[in-house]
Amino acid sequence: MRLWKKAAGALKDRNSILIASISRKSAYRNPDLEAVIIKATSHDESYLDYKNSQRVFQWVRTSPIYVKPLMWGLSTRMEKTRNWVVALKGLMLMHGIFHCKTPGVQMIGRLPFDLSSFSDAHSKQDKAVAYNVFIRAYFLFLDQKSAFLAAEMKVQRVLRSKQMEEPLVDELTRLQKWQSLLDMLLQIKPPAETTIVTLILEAMECAIVEIYDVYSKFCSGMAHALLRIYEDGGKVEASMALRILQKAREQSGELTRHFEFCKYIGVLNATEFPKVEQVPEEDIKDLERIINGVPKRKSIDGMVMPQEDKAIVVKGNGEIVEHRESKRLLRTIITDKWEVFEDNLMSDWGGSSSDVRSTTTTASSNALVTFVPASSNQDIPDLINF
Image 1: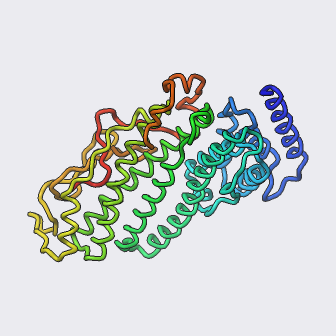
Image 2: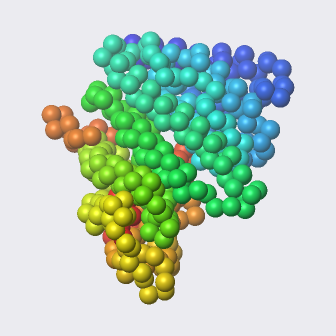
Image 3: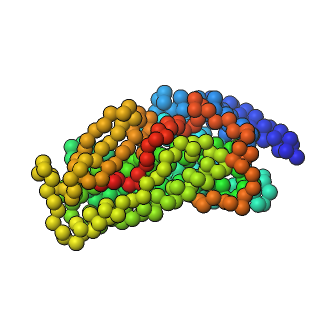
């Protein structure tokens, strides 16, 4: 049965490539690119075609004129399939395309295909339900991230054209959106042991790297926002920041449980995640004092700050940059490729992580979403510690 399914899938892929090859080239269609997309999203669940995935990424980086035919080819592939393997490979390919970081891709907006109600028609009922949950969660994150990136690009263009600083309320609103994206990422996980297969684990590797990226950007943004609040923020901004920090406190526990779960099932990137520190109670109290109208204290240099030590950012090369004066310490790792800051285990599952993932083929040189490991001796704050 398994051999028959593999042969049937290979035949479908071959026919799709043949049809694509005889199509007419236009602004929205590129037969060669469509053929590569089909190969990168094949029906073979035991194999992820890194070579053709990288070819797609190279096309995207070459020129923005390939973005439209890429979206057309991938959307057509996704809308027609009812196979979880093809759908998941398509989402992973889309995830990797985002990390090409080209303006054309970042301005796509909502994804041009919809897998929010995806239903697999080629697996047993119990497995199909689990695959559907995983794919829908993955799609939801990518769709919202795509919309968020497009909105951010527009905002940044306006700010640059007017040469003005972003309003503090808007900056805090963006932090809330980062937290929402993090919530969506934490939902991308296999809901059943029977679905922990190589391809699912490959997708989890991509999701883990994305968590590093989203969380680091949230922490960087939170650091900047708190400094602005301590300098000239009002009660409205302090109230928003307080809600964000309270949410960050909840997410710290969720992150810890999620990474423990990922390590348990054999997600390699999860083993690089350092310990997540708890949100200091003093941060909450500082904001509460601002909300209650308690006068702020003056620092030595005349800046309005609540305390008097230094917040520090540690770059990936070890360079230390002092930002402002504050009582507690923030440490952040920043690299050129990634900005990396430093659910419950299913105890009823049998076996070990090594048993689950004996055939995984992840390699750093081929990964769809590049991973830059954090230093093992770094602590990761769940928010900005002042």
